[in-house]
Image (tube, rainbow over all chains, first blue to last red):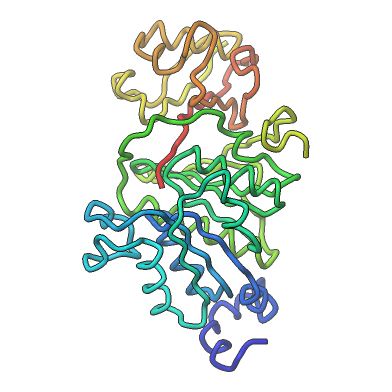
Amino acid sequence: MLTRKERERYDRQILISEIGLAGQKKLKKSRVVIAGAGGLGSPIAIYLTAAGIGTIRVIDHDQVELSNLNRQILHGEKDIGKNKSDSAKRKLRTLNSTVEIEALTETITANNVSRLVDGCDIIVDAMDNLPTRYILNRCAIEKNIPFIHGAVSGFEGRVTTIIPGETACLKCIYRGTTAKKKVPVIGVTPAVIGSVQATEAIKCLTGIGALLTNRLLIYDGLKGTFLQLTVHKNPQCDHCGSQ
Amino acid sequence: MSATLHVHTTHLQFTNGLEVVAVEGNTVGECLNHLIRQFPQMEKALFAKKDKLLNTIEIYVNSASAYPNELGKSIRDGDTIHLLVALAGG
């Protein structure tokens, strides 16, 4: 059930015929894991909190640094040195006190990932490295949880949505890992990509629209273009090949 | 066969800033060899060793993934090839 205040709060999105009251109730019942509270995690968390997701679990092991602030808009100067997940929780609670925010300051590993994402309906990828993304991808497949991948570099960003057992997974698209180094990025790029990921999460949770499945959406901010590439489920994939 | 090859942003430093390069060949592998003849630095940017792409390179032909056996994939006149590099930032 939605309260009178919630109906008022979400009035503009309830007016969207594809969402309606039924969709809003689904959002309220939903539990979303956002893996990372940085550049991508910021817009994802802000828009999903504003949209009225029931419970959002934010996982990040890092503390806020000055060099984060050009893009990680969940955090401000006063948060420098504090845990990102705690900082995120404070901001998100200010934005929407009706959403349950769970803040976890943990490093995602192959050993703890199952526990960290337990009970969630969707995992949204806001990580800053491919190895952890692969850990999340494998876990999402094993636990049959939709996984919304996003990544950025410079003015470029990419998004794809993975439905376990049905679509290409992250390991069907990429196989290697990039060298660990500082990634150049301007805040508007994760703003665009994180917003697309949040849109995918809302669509997936409410069962509306066409998800970015078997498609890799590539945004080029410098050219002002969106390119859509087709990806295929790989029967030999070491993550999803047996499914 | 003639194809249009789109260079990834990170490789523009090796193609004199050219984002689109005309290449020729009957397969993706032959087209990449033609690219490398024009821009020799692209070899190290694409290949781990002879006939073995770096595992961070993904190839799309006519907007569809060419994986697996990318290098042997046939090319027809007018085809479009996109070279992608894995992104990790968040």
